Image 1: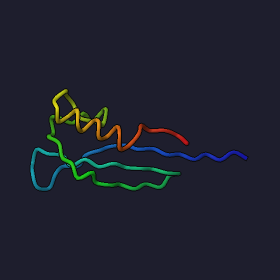
Image 2: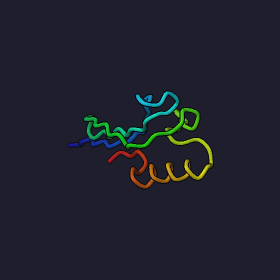
Image 3: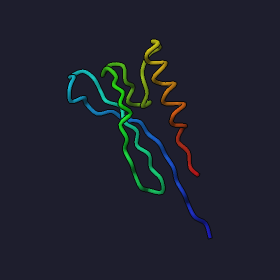
Length: 80
């Protein structure tokens, strides 16, 4: 008998309620088809977010810190 267990992590943004040109960053964790969304309590400017890669765009110190945080705190998508 074969069972499929899945685990995935994606990052996405929502428009900030307080500042017009900022985005709030969230993570969605899916395990066996059940989803949970968590706010990372971090914001980024609209033009600094790459929605196709789901990470910060650019090479500034702030963006490198954010992308490192995303990589270290939440490993890449994978199937278990």
